[in-house]
Amino acid sequence: MDDFDAVTVGSLARLCAADENTEVGKYAIGFCYGWIEGVEQFYAALLRDERFNVEPAACPGRVVSREEAREIFVAWAAGNQGAANLEPLQGIIEAMRATFPCN
Image 1 (cartoon, rainbow, N blue to C red):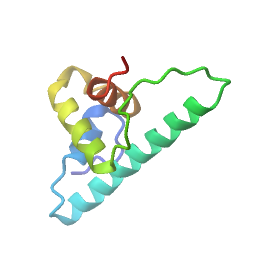
Image 2: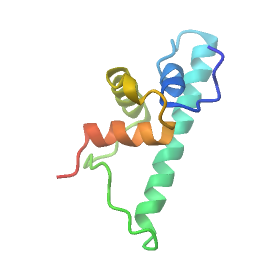
Image 3: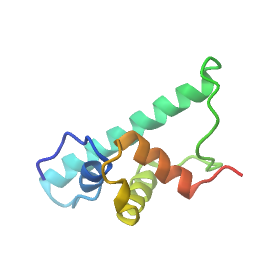
Image 4: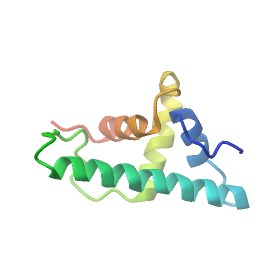
């Protein structure tokens, strides 16, 4: 596990799927949580700011924990190998959109 750059969905998914029982795995999952928190905060700021007129991409109807979001992202990335080269931000949003669609 030497790819802490996380420049693609694939590289971030590998970090997010790390074995948390190893020293490197603990750091990798912490790094993953940082990405998830960052995307969540960025997305929330866009939704609040009227200048951007952004429609919700995902509608969970409840608070989603970091751990649940990590599990959702890892599962989505594994099931969407064609998305491996997308940017991580896009992958996290697509994973949430697929899990919590807005009707």
